[in-house]
Image 1 (tube, one colour):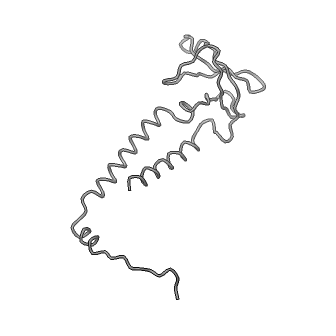
Image 2 (cartoon, one colour; image 1 turned 180 degrees about the vertical axis):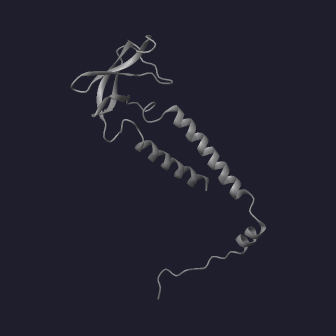
Image 3 (cartoon, helix red, strand yellow; image 1 turned 90 degrees about the vertical axis):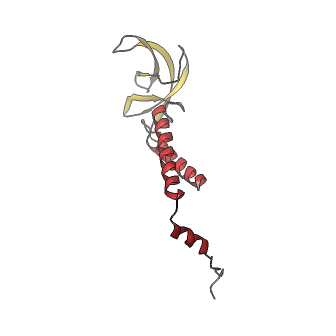
Length: 145
């Protein structure tokens, strides 16, 4: 039972991940980018930005992310939608496909659902136990006559 619950949850989470990425994985275009440390428009501190071109002009997006460090000149890939090239994302497993917020939320949801499943099946009623003990499987023929 636990294995099937885990497999079902992983399939659902995988489908969620595949179809909710922004920019969209299926419609997005990938482009090579280079990390440059440029001043942020709000704080005016130098931050790592991925500089890439969509074929018409150059764009720069914020490349900061939890547990990711970049050096000047690092090469990477960005994904963007052709209609909105300014709204791009760094195309990496940690940051585009899996974010720390989603990872934490999915672990908490999985544990909560797992505890609910255990509590529901933990203490069956005496009638249910008797029914399980008295159950006899009826042999079925493979083919009808």
